[in-house]
Length: 334
Image 1 (cartoon, helix red, strand yellow):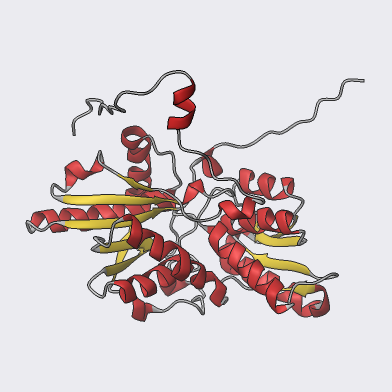
Image 2 (cartoon, one colour):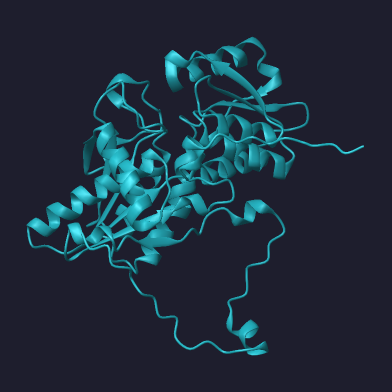
């Protein structure tokens, strides 16, 4: 693959006061939650060398204010619960999470004044623990050897012991999860590709992203093929993705909206994550690497058949949540 830099010509720019008028005006909002969604769609031109004639696009969900695709679901879940009266004074929201949904809950909760308690495996990355706590969230840890399923079980036990104290949305069974993508992610992708999308591919976690987006894309264009990605082994290293055969199946998971499933080895997802950093300047997590690896597989198959295509995937979050431990200290001067 060529490593020559790709020149970008911005064209002539005005000088002085005219420059300020030339620059796009940033959107003005009243709350950070208004920044959720409408994320950019980025073309992966460097990787397209692997599949000539096929366009590869990635939805930059790390551009959400909480840094991940889970901002969409957390916002919809909390807003819907407030509208129904499930969240009110004296009640805390509690849910299980492996990290990103917890950060999203924490951000939205801080913005809307909703107290948050999270149950997560004790071995989730340090940045995820530190970020959620920075928002004022209470953390309860489950057995690291039981993974996300263990966190689900522990959260249920806590709620059953004191049901009047908690609102338990259960992101794995909450229709607001997939509806966030049905009403947001899918129409955004369809508009951003001007209806040219031929394939959508992303991994299964709670399954909200793949189910909601696929369901709406099929309605917008029945010819679009929607493909899920799963780790190829129960003991995988693709944090955030779920191996359905060995896991508790999320109640919102609906295989009927999917056209196919790709089974992804951990090494392939990690390798593509590294390639994205080196050749696309995208430092993203391994689930994003797996998503792009799946898009590449589809693109190569289309190119080998001499077919054109427009393949879209999702960049779930940034890589710093996995690799960079945060250290935030206060220094007092008396």
